[in-house]
Amino acid sequence: MSEKEFYIETFENLPALASANNESMREQFARTFYDFLQLSHLYDSAIEVVKTYLNILDSEFSVKFQRNPIHNIESRLKSPQSIIGKLQKKNLPLTPDAARRNLLDIAGIRVTCCYISDIYAIAEMLSNRDDFVIIKQKDYIKTPKQSGYRSYHMIVSVPVYMSQQKSYAPVEIQIRTIAMDFWASLEHQLKYKPSAAITPEISEQLKQCAERIAETDLQMQKIFMEINDLE
Image (cartoon, rainbow, N blue to C red; front, side):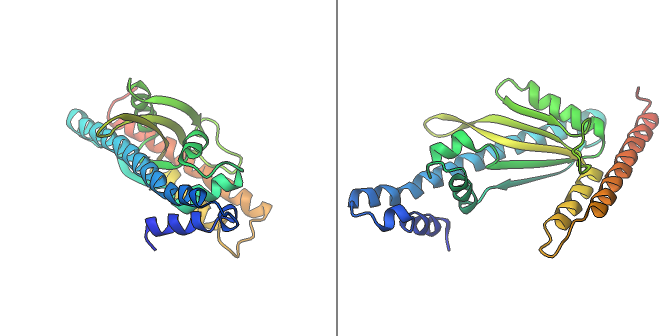
């Protein structure tokens, strides 16, 4: 099913529409899919803005310091079904405007770095860009979650220049080391495995693994700094 077909089917089968006799109301809801298509395009474009800037930073580091601080960049855009489902769960109107005002995780980027210092360097450069607006920041490296999860989270509102206007859209950015990403990926798989039963004992083992990985990160950072005579 195409994205357009999904929207049409979703809105035409809403309970409010199934019992509606007002044809103009049905047409209004049926046309809403186009507004959601535009919303998806806006957030997808916002992702590209951030990715482009990160790639520029990585290239600049390569020229100046002969190394790349960014190991990998991945992005994701919430599906139409996920956006609509979240609006329904929050009892919000099924409109693009409601999504823009209430959902901050429609667009997401995960950046994996080589060293902890790279995480903070990239976060600082993102914060210092004068056309980016920092909505929220959370440092789960200095203050890990109870599970042991470590990462640096930012929500950044970025400008997107369309043919006739400039719009801002929030992008959730997670910055972590390769080791942190390794742990988070496996923990996520285990946590959401259908047959999984995460007992307190397993949770404690996962936390211990996270702590050992954090120690390795710090050791690798120290070795890197010693080799490069950094303070």
